[in-house]
Image (cartoon, one colour):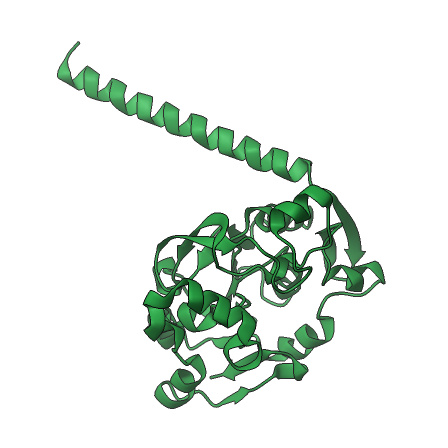
Length: 287
């Protein structure tokens, strides 16, 4: 066998091995989705599937409503219709589906969700609404570095139970309240600037106390595109989640203190910030 043939054979083996693992991973994702215990609701914005033990947002759909609909309808006027959207902490996609109806057909949404279980439901909701060409989901968290991290293994913002107990007994759980922490699911994390996104007109971050860290490593993107920014401010309004993250990652103390509101208003010259938008824990920065 010639040296050229050996190299070619090796390349083919690598390609086949990669294809095998990708196929195996895809089958695992399919099986996870297939076995999901969920309820599907027909809403004015599209089909939304939720886990039967989803404690916080489930009630709105069970009674014919839509989670945070009034807040999002008020927010709609501030979202540029001809630019792309970045959503951090997409959960199962209720806001994702809503936002996708606002922007033009040639615009894209890039949505990040770290929890594998929620990501599977997110992709299911995207597919059943036939939005695969508009919404691009990524099974990753967003933080102040690129690498791996762990989620918390305790529903601190809901039922007050460990997640293994929740899954075993199908206990009602606030999956959207699971933050970065200790002893939970290992996830990939990246930064806003490492995404290398284009034409971003709106950023929505609902990351359970991680916002200071997240925005500290998104300055190039924010400075370049000057997007409208809608973010949960746990640092000011709900310290239990913020403190959970800071206690787990004390080595990123500087990032934990980053103030996106101050940066946008004083450094970038944003016009204003609407604090506690619609009475929520979210702030809205308007360029």
